[in-house]
Length: 296
Image 1 (tube, helix red, strand yellow):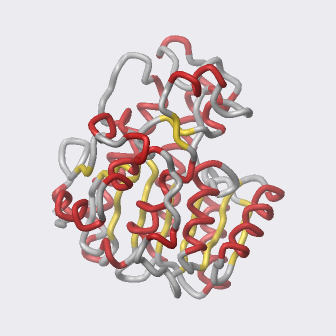
Image 2 (image 1 turned 45 degrees about the vertical axis):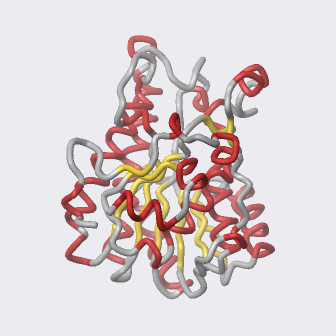
């Protein structure tokens, strides 16, 4: 996949989750790593926002595929809990680093530790993210005029600036053939009423990936986006996750929905795919070969 294939705010796309025929399978998030062919033994993978939700699920899933994992997040207690799960899952090595992705000095120091203590850097998942409801607001997506400036700025700092600072620290330290994956969302490329600052922040992520995929081609680093492809029960909906009433009437996935696609993007099987947008439910309902054909 050419790095310059990215255009118009979004590059090659695999999957519209709204059109997946077997949505219950695609959204279930219960595909075991053992069902996949990818082996990540020998790879060093860093995950930001690794203390819970999608970041935790990816870290454990990548560990199950044999990777050494570096866990970056702001809460040390939660990181240690996730680190224990990663060791139990079969990680080569595990490093937990308390890091705020909005503070450049902390991000740079964290990635320096990853290289020094784990011996290199092959794969990065830029996953750290917040929404209005996780910051004490009334809803995950809110009308633009209802945001406070403080909440809007924090969403942009974590979701967009945080990805850029992660790229800035990671790219110079990554091996040729490396893979950088930003967790994004369809709302970043399909603006609609109610998308709010969360949508703006994800549009920024999509643009960053498009630029970086072109710039990093000469270094042999591929840069892609991965979307959970729908509603996932995480802290973005508040400290207790998604309200029970919403779970009862909407298709909702567990964070593990992203794991199969995450392992594939981290593996050498996805070599050559860059500047692409991949929907996790679509990947789960398809095959890696079919997805590669779509992206190619």
